[in-house]
Image 1: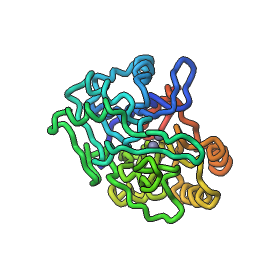
Image 2: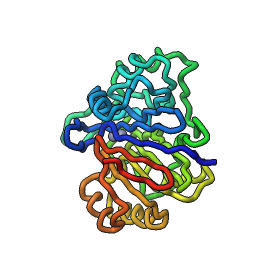
Image 3: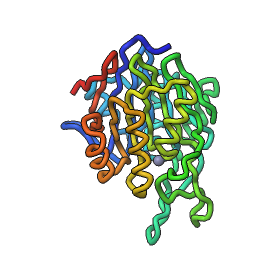
Length: 288
Ligand SMILES: [Zn+2]
Ligand SMILES: [Zn+2]
């Protein structure tokens, strides 16, 4: 069954912003359909609250928060959101709260974990309102999560020098990375956070979980900025095979890859930005 209702998707925070909107290295999306209001990620600061207000979105009306993974740029305002909205349900992978680092050679070790205040707020949130699972999870008949995504494609990696320790000995596979799916009459809409699991792995997992094969739109960060040519080519080939009507890369996709996607796939590719709103009914249309 697919949602018979209109689905509205609003990009609340992104590395790019429309006129009058704030940007940051972060990502957050608002999904609204069938009287449900879902916040997918929370940016790296509270700046998304300003963008939401500008779009006429009341963050306090959210009944569900989903965290794509535990990096700081997706969990930055978790504390504020839970404080504002103590009745909200939360869905996340158990490893989202783990301490983790990014270590670029010759640069200082960077803590990329969820902020401590966010972790504390999540752990203090009533357990009856928290779903912490590695498994795929269906929220409503029209929306659910991929669960942990099997890493079967040999070309896809997490996209960066991510480690569990400050010495760089234990790689962080970012097992907590998950994506959302929305069933629409036109096919699946897939929402990714950073897509550390890889786009091919993510889409294949969502096809398995939902039993659907038609991909209508892919929206979110694709984290291909450090990808080798063979991986980019494999991703392009897969996209051509899935043939989505819309691909809306955001956040950490990478400028070079963005150009390649536009050249290879043409008009279906639209760059995402904070302030972008999409309405999905029988067709998808951008509202601005
Ligand atoms: Zn990330
Ligand atoms: Zn990110």
